Amino acid sequence: MKIFFLDQSGTPGGAELCLIDIAKPYSDRSLVGLFIDGPFKNLLQQNHIPVEVLANQPIQVRKESSLLQALGSLKQLIPLIIKVVKIARDYDLIYANTQKALVIGAIASFFARRPLVYHLHDILSKEHFSATNRRIAITLANRFASLVIANSQASQTAFIEAGGHSEITTVVYNGFDQKIYQPCDSDISQLRQNLGLEGKFLVGHFSRLAPWKGQHILITALAKCPPEVTAILVGDALFGEQDYVQQLHQQVAALGLENRVKFLGFRSDIPQLMAACNLVAHTSTSPEPFGRVIVEAMLCGKPVVAAKAGGATELVENGVNGFLVTPGEPQELAQVITSCVLETEKSQVIANNARISASQRFDVTTINQQISQLLGELGIGNGVLFE
Ligand code: UDP
Ligand code: GLC
Image 1: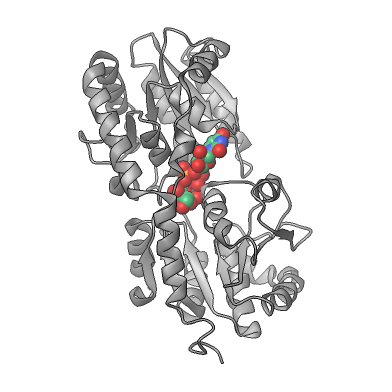
Image 2: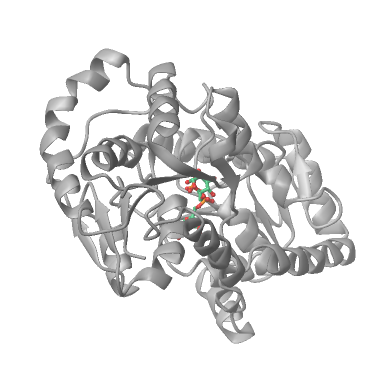
């Protein structure tokens, strides 16, 4: 099957990293079309996945855009749509991986007479999207998508609650290559030494810097933890959240935590960094659609504490293979961190359970088989859909 994948982003967020795993098995006969240039293109190339940048300026519609703003950008979209329609004619299927990709992909699927699959990586709720953007996504998915793959039950439920047709949806979790999450011990101690973190109880936070990812909650919690607890914040502001970055630095200074918080920026050695941590914290203040970092920490055999909402509650069972805390509650988070400092044996048992359950549930080969089966069921090539 020849697939034309579409993604709006030039930077590798979770949806883009997931797309790499999905596109890889089809790389000899597929193309990823991006709406902007950037490091994601290089990552695709490194993975030998054919990629083409289809637009030369970013699409202006934002998650909070009104109908008028959305309509205003239509003019800018027309050349992109024409390009996508033309390319789509050489492929069997359009696979939209983001919201703007859905908009372009839906229109192109109509003109190119190709089926559309929408991979939904978002919770379509008012916390994350404007009413206009939700309405556009739901209307287009209902009208044009043969299949909506939701990255969690939470994303699927929100889609249906917003008016999406339940019969076109199915849940497929992100898949992970377990080998990557077993770095060797010497790498880890070297990394700890390089970062000057020997002898510390290290809490890692691995997310792009954005208010809803809640790095500020971890910083507040840290001030309530024993002094040996130190945090690394791994990730960068991928979508222009510079004010938030500044606020985080000010917060660290105001709490006198300069020696206990390290900002490491965007990194490509996530498994090694996670393995160097004693605990991984996920602190999103709005429901997380899936939460790749949670599964990655589990695969690294680390205890993880996650905000109890959205997809995170499908990944972690509190007290069994991780910890769940109320989102936006630093006091509760501080208590869990402190108890992990004190009860290392208990948290080690939980971390072992985490590794076992994550490797059973999120194996990339199994997940790719699920996707391949779902795409096969669309009947492409059998004349069912469009001939
Ligand atoms: N990540 C990364 N480098 C960083 C920070 C994060 O490669 O410096 C990766 C992280 O390992 C995870 C992804 O970015 O695979 C983030 O995905 P997640 O689903 O947790 O959140 P998203 O940003 O997609 O909302
Ligand atoms: C999105 C979501 C994140 C999810 C990722 C992969 O970026 O924000 O929660 O893990 O997609 O599905």
